[in-house]
Length: 456
Image (tube, rainbow, N blue to C red):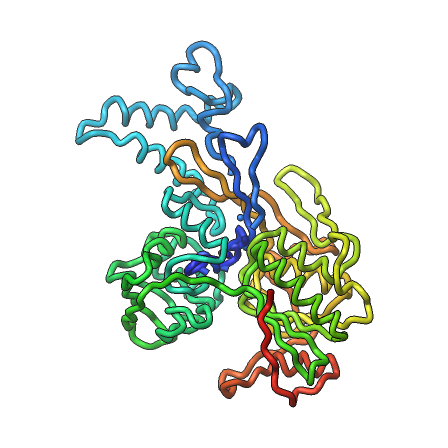
């Protein structure tokens, strides 16, 4: 789905996810790999998240002997027949195209994009050098743009993932970041972006669309918005530098309940969460609320670290590759709230994705915490990000499934809360029915005003 300016929801995922532009999505948690080093020492960053590559294999997988070496260069002998049409087409273009000069780089980039688009996977995509740079920037929690989590969602009322954008698949606001330009301009969850600066998004990927929405601080972007059944209208937004504070801590119920809101899963977020939770426990608070509503994910390592604050041992999640059996990723030692007498509840909704679902699923399966709210997004895949040689950008590719400790694969279905609560559409300003339900589940008072305190 998953922390950029707009963020594709789930990683983003890092996500990976990530998907907000790039946070989104729900960007689901992802991994980053350099194609030059892949065979020797892969450089991987697990992101959204749930967001999320094997570049160069077509050209670097070895050479066959004899006639085939000249017609299918770089193609393994066992795949020569399958790839012969590709090379025939490439040679025809480079040798015989007569309507103008052939830009070899564009032809190759287009071939890479076509291969990945053919998978039909909304979380796998080719990115230009600029899009790749921006996506990685977004995962750091700082970016230039409008500040909103977005995802590609079907317009048939089912709200399913989709690609590419078009009449039945819209770039949809998942959640504006609080105080960001998108929030100040009045954008709301569920708003559909159909045009950017008057140009339709039809036929584009989320990454391409996000790249058009983003831009330097101080510049203005005009978004054409469809909200519900109303006629399309334009919103002008001045872009800014978005620094997302990913952990917000409060004391509730007269200091007896610690509340920790997590909006992303960067390494810094994991450190801030651990420090804030330790302050709660050290101050004697034995009831903890973790709010993951609207969180599209991020680094898988951050999800593991946050879940490990409550789970002393055993699997946090399982990772299942294309040709491998599930392998457990176990809890890290030294969690500050693993004492079972510390009660934990987790607030979730349909915007909780990828790394958020890893944490939620781990606490639910181990019995360490209860989920309260709405069914989660349902992103159960991991993406790996890989740079390509030269100035050719990179791509992300779905390379594994992740499963909960009980080996549940929640992709497309999400996690069902232990205590379902849906906030009423006409909820009064400042009211929070889901948080009230959490306090009730903890047998805590809802009357006292929360005391906000900054996370480390």
